[in-house]
Amino acid sequence: MTLTLDSLNHPTSSSPTQLDLVLNGKKVPLHIGQNILFSDSFGTIIQNLSKNIIIVTDRHLNQIYGKKVKYFLEKSFNLTVQIIEILPGEEQKTRKTKEFIEDEMFKRGMGRDTLLIAFGGGVVLDLASFTASTYLRGIKLILIPTSLLAMVDASIGGKGGVNTPFGKNLIGSFYHPEYVFIDPSFLDTLPKKEFLNGLAEIIKYALITSKDLFDELYEKKSKLDLNELICRSLLIKKEIVEKDERDNGIRSILNFGHTIGHSLELLEDFELSHGEAISLGMIFASFLSLKKKFLEMEDFLKIFSLFKMYNYPLLLSQKVSWKRIGHTLSLDKKAENKNPRFILIEKIGKIAPTPDNKVLHRVEVDELKSSLIWFCNRFVSKKESYARHY
Ligand SMILES: NC(=O)c1ccc[n+]([C@@H]2O[C@H](COP(=O)([O-])OP(=O)(O)OC[C@H]3O[C@@H](n4cnc5c(N)ncnc54)[C@H](O)[C@@H]3O)[C@@H](O)[C@H]2O)c1
Image (tube, rainbow, N blue to C red; front, top):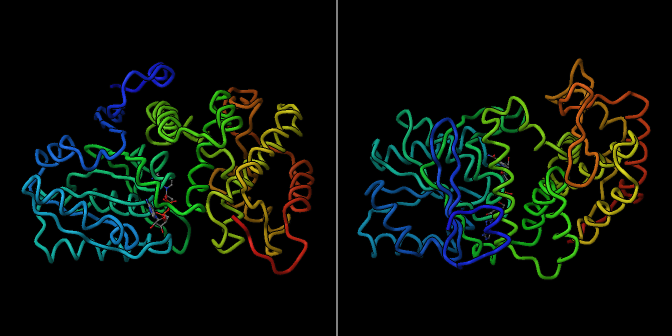
């Protein structure tokens, strides 16, 4: 079944869903379905792409699923499957780990006919995509996201890359996989904190483009249909990246909440997860939208209560102050002459355009300062030591 908004509203089949992404003239099919990885169609697709398979994954995923996937492909489809395992965690997303993967592939004699399968969260996907794009000048790639964040965000749009001591994702490439396979049943083993990370991106899609999605999240907390949420999110991201593959324009709306979010991650020495940081960032961007009289108070309060409803900790350490946030904001890559610019919303599900019909708003220094003071008074812990609860 091909995925459209209409098919989401009127499901007719429980068979895997397909969504085709067209980027730079290349079609990238996304297959979405429960247990899709252990289906004949998956095995047949792999078999047709290559007989030499390398799976790049992290230790957590390898321990839970590695043997099972390898066994299935080798026994059912007579393929040679090798696994390269990296340590889990954002700190592994480096040039050094990329070099480790490349050297492992050379040692194992992997040639140009190799199919690289990236199996994991966003860290594995970003690293493995970047590696596939440069190994022997490019080999075939398949993405299998296993975290919610990777399913709704990192698996779609072609960005791969690594961090450097100078900042996140500063080295990388645009490279498109042959296929993406999304199996929500992997989420059964995902820790709650990681689930909230992904959910924050789904909330972001709702705030910038879809009141319906927001209402669904608001009203159906206890009976969320994850398959549907993932499909809706993919449709939203697909529409945005197809319009702006290289991230030179409209794609920047995906940074809603990220301007402050990135500052908070930095000031908290990355002890704050990305989802927590951008959830606070979205509250801040909504507050600015309220102050600029784009957003009604009622919508603002609803947004705030959604994050509380899903138990986001919404707590910062005393390392964060309005002055420190202000300093890091001036270094933001979207800043103009050191003045930060923000994506704002005019209501839930709709971006506020600037007077010249663009999306990045300048904010007066005094307005920014008073908003940051409100934000820090509200969210910075009054105690020196505390624990965040999930
Ligand atoms: N390329 C893009 O467009 C894009 C978009 C968004 C984010 N990203 C990148 O994604 C990264 C964050 O991704 P993430 O949040 O998935 O982090 P991650 O890859 O570090 O995964 C988080 C943790 O969850 C574990 N995990 C993943 N799936 C699991 C499962 N099914 N069961 C049990 N454990 C599981 C991992 O082992 C890891 O410990 C960042 O580096 C970010 O820059 C990239």
